[in-house]
Length: 639
Image 1 (tube, rainbow, N blue to C red):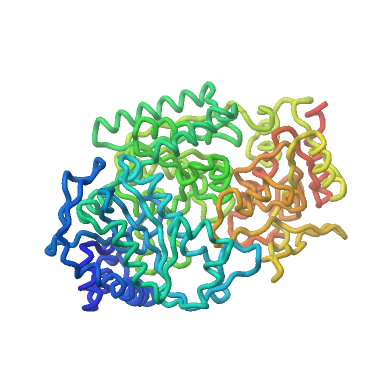
Image 2: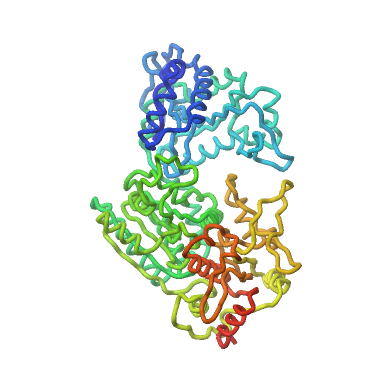
């Protein structure tokens, strides 16, 4: 899906005639149902006009050379002729299921007859800098950006790993960047020594280097049949490569935690069978899998993802939680782009996937609208409807008691209602076996009973799980070195009862979490900066030493688990006169404290925090009446 495509000669002619941006705007409106903003249209005019000028010499060539083509996409011979430009162009090409668009793709063959695609990133920058000697991102004014050559390289790598035109052929993706307003010496930061390896893989062209850019294009895609290659490219679909599947399977086979057992296998088989059933027909199915924390919902989802892709089915995993997606992307490095955001499915082709696995479906939003979504595009469909529309079989895996924000509406009743409206086949599975917290179902049951989600107090768990109550934050914090000596991971988390500040100008974290004289910072915010999975602030908090001195907030904690967990129970949820009371004045979570459903949301949040430890939990309960209630509830549960 793109906003314009055609021959190189047509591209140059339309750009010079001034009609290109208008044509792209019309296609944008047809695809997205709203008008693009003025700044984006102006960027098309400026950047594409500059590119057309740079490539004009190629479009005017009298091309009469013939070469022998190779590969499954290629033809037996390729003729360059004046009537049809040998090179084809696609503008604003949508990478399937990502929400990302490639500025320009140029297709054709090289002199050896190899089919190639140039992935070209365009920038209007006239000045650029780097923050310091450690930075790998670049600064444009006060804003941080990925190096344009890195952006192009990432897009090219994605195509090679996930686009069927590349994964099923020997088609080559070649990244490059063109900063058409940037002249020497203002381009020096982009050519710094730290970027030498990057520029070798993904060359950078700037103002004054148009002849070099034209030579690069002609040398890689100038030998013919670009339009035929473009047809193959635009008609292709999301399909991971063998390398990606091998990376996914390697993790699943190496780690016991990802193996299927008992009722997990039952649900896996039923879903697998349903995909085969729907592929043979023309209908759709919705399957709901419910389970408490640690019952293996994600194990089922990831195993299904791997098995489906191995069979050649079109399958994807999606979630609405940033921390949870970060966890999976960091665990399955090399296959991280199999794990999508629910938002990415907003404009997915109807039933374009055979199987969509919506994990942590309790975090499904009412709509996919965001703050910057244009008014004309808002409230078109519910997010649940979008997810069901995207696949022949959509599986929702959820815990009815884990939604923690007022805009999270994922419930089994909602999904079943949407499915009935679509005339879909329905199935539902409930998981009970406990694989988290040392397999101690009694501890999970106690948490549910303590917080009022269950009316029945569970049996004691004795020494199979260890819960400690402490009186000071210093005693709570000793959990970190004690666990390190024991060879276990441990982290501290807390209710959202303190503000969560941005880092200082020097990058230091603000010690927002205060208990008396004791002060510690929350984990670093992710913001909107691009990160590789291993470098994401949530991953670094959970998996590196720097996280040991930080406190995990609820939104960065979901999805992670540790050997032991230390929980600061704030005064936003207290026990008074035989019932739980939510105290808005004690909360710093603005959407939650203003919600009429605050009590349910904060109970859900503490349920998440209390179940992050595999072998034990240490609790600092700041409200004394609440502490006494927790202590009394704990009596007799462990030896």
